[in-house]
Image 1 (tube, one colour):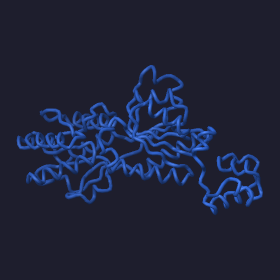
Image 2 (tube, rainbow, N blue to C red):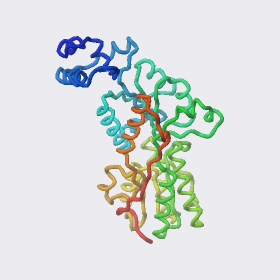
Image 3 (cartoon, helix red, strand yellow):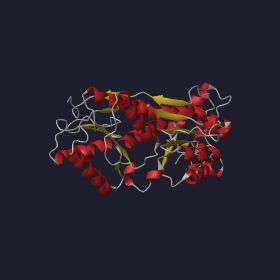
Length: 349
């Protein structure tokens, strides 16, 4: 395995100079020498000794990617097509920028802070946490952080200058998405539209999508279908029970369309209703949210809200890289636009 000393001898420079290049401390190194050092780093396939870097307290070039640990008891958090798509985009962009990815499903805020300190990560990308959890991490972690789909509530604690100046988030127009997909269903003639979220009722993303749904109903003078609250649980057996309840309400003509908070749940519901000989969309219209890669191949193909997952993942890494380099961030809070994609799972009534 090549060492810094090997590269230094070939390039005709000191080991310290090579080390500075590896750690992005280029100083007064000439362009020619810089390119020569990079050439030998690539040619010898040099791999930094991360253990030694940690012991020396150096920048490890590791980006910690933390998923929503509130779902830690479910293996499905990494199986969700949305999660796999955004992680793929993040990992590719991290690698292209010369960093290494550490993926972790943490058990709580303190574990996130400990991970950052123990591994001397260059920065953290954190997905899907609630406001209180974000604040705890912002107060304790001493590394650059960019959140994805994490929204801070307007509290006195959040208004503190320290929190505001450290809060960077790549979000989505979730409320607008819930609004326009519901308006779309209303335009098809549906007056009884059911919204189904997941079991995490207080999840901000889930709540924003539901708020958009309610706004569209109110504007049209429509109400929420009168039935018990139902959720798509992480547990498969509980999800089956929810679908059974849904089917019973459908037989009572309580609703003619269902808006699911994600494509993932819409797929399962479509299959369930088809097995009950409920034709989609002749008997029931179904829409989702995300437009994941399976939406166009499902049967019937799914009408949904499209979001550019790849662009969001790349934007998060770009923002974190800029913060690490000390560059000024013009827009610390970004919300990506959404749009309706009409396919075969909906029809006019």
